[in-house]
Image 1 (tube, rainbow, N blue to C red):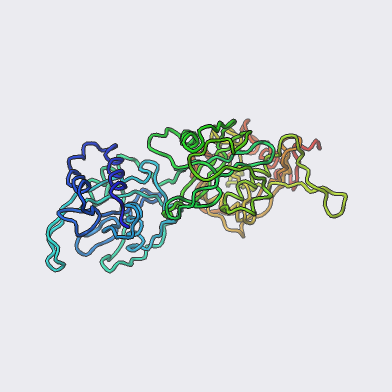
Image 2 (cartoon, rainbow, N blue to C red; image 1 turned 180 degrees about the vertical axis):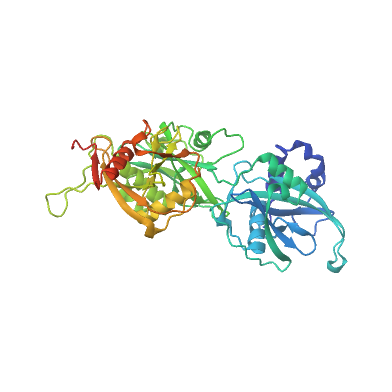
Length: 490
């Protein structure tokens, strides 16, 4: 089925909410919507809808493909009967013309799925195709690249002859160029969804069984976290979360809501979706809550997750949180092991990068004041080790946080700090690696986490410095391989 009249009208009204001055130009299309004609069919005259994809890279350049008859344009074309929405039509066109799949793209906060531009332009008659002169209403949707690297452009449409990435002032369409410059799209993906990792402080996690609507909602028929997508009216992602909760479960009142991590999900259209996950506490009976979306809410402990239809990312996220947060009134000490004498305790693994310049100064980053950990404090370039080797994790963090390229052969373990922040807390094995060589100059790639990079002389370290980083820098300078913090030992 092609996009419905109601979907097209809602898309137009969302666009006109930001560009009310263009309503008169769209009167012809609105008139078609009031009729029985199909506005997205290429046979509808005197005008019909087309859709385009405006892909913006990290350098604020826009992908254009060369058409033999019309020159350089953003990838686009006519809507097909199988396109459920106008957005999916734009994604199909860029896949067909340039070989770029939806998973390589993500939405922009400024547009959130509504078009950044609707260009009305006249099309000359084409007697060879039996087409009279008519009008196109081109709905142009903006996307960022989900990854830092440019995806390979594979030209597949026989009418496309080449591809170029053009800077914003060089965008060929005047109306699109003006809106892109006005919106100040920087090509840097940011979270456009928010979800809640809700726990009771006693080891249970609240999960939401979603409706079974394949192709309509994400994670259809599976357990998931509560939450949803940001709207233009949401002033923050926390506002998005609270609005979504009020719409889905109005009686649920969370305590201690705070940002946790940004996860990557996949939309129903196949787009990459950065999701800001918040944690929050709640104590109550889920079956007493009014639930306006989905099937049910239920408490689960981490040991039950493998029995559920649940995305691997959500399963890993819950287990990560459970490992980092000991249930109230319990000890972090695990069950007796096979030998009957030892007791296993889960240790988190952190990776840290020790870089020294030619003057023996150490690279440190100033963490954002709103950072969940050590806000407003200097620290190594660091991260938690995920489902990957420690060196792979380190290399990934260096690239993501500071744009540095490090080769595994240039990395060596320089120091280990075994840390426990509080009695009964999760012990952390902080692995500090030294890189002898690297490519690139440190730059701020994640401004929500780090505000600046700076080289510091070891004898002039900042006063506000994460203790494990100070301990490691001192240990490396003294030639020691191991230190402990918080264990009550020297």
